[in-house]
Length: 159
Length: 159
Image 1: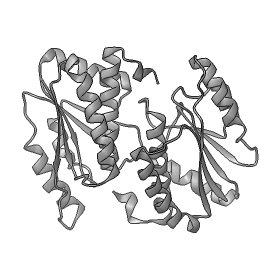
Image 2: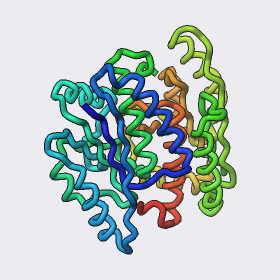
Image 3: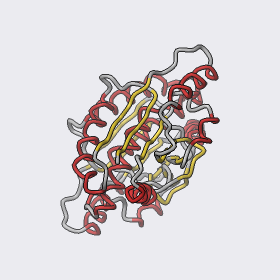
């Protein structure tokens, strides 16, 4: 089983990249024991089209190539379920047993063309606030790490 | 009028410090025009007491010295109002007119002793998920920046 994040936008030399690497390391240290051998983060380019609508359509088209029916596809979207950390641990746990790959999709600065959400197995949200897509990636990694520590009963999640 | 964040925990060489500095610069570039001359971030030490209860009591005692009745005191707590970005812009705007200093309080890894929340003018939350206190600081800075850009009708908030 694999854990994948498919994300629009590249971090490059942003300090967020350092934080991402740290979370990747910490997640990989624990994730095998809950069934995930790999954690892949795939960055896809932000569209350069002029209008929001055109950018959404182009980015949604690119991202849709990574949706596979045999996987469990989770989209991050402000209209999704406002989950808590325990919900994340349940998602990770459920999928461990189903033997599916768990794929998280994060849109670009303009978000998704909502049509793509029909292909989602689950849509999740981190509160009502609008978050920048780069920060959302870190927030997701944090919740994946926290979710794994909940499953493992590791002391981190009690903080 | 001043904008202050009173926070338990020190960032030191953490890459989160780089992100904090970037947000501070961006906020100061715009904040004068919405009435805030300064943005101060005060870091207070994490308690070294053995039990969660003792740490909460010590940290809450230290942080309570920064509560002033003439200020507008906002606490970040998971039980607070699940606000959106527009709510933040309203908080900033309201206080601009009241002429009060706006003080945001962020607890340590164990959170606040809930008694301190009685002194709050407002309690806000970023969704149901548990966030680490260091990341919460960045999330708050992001929302303050976003809130100011909403007031200024700056293009950032449309992303």
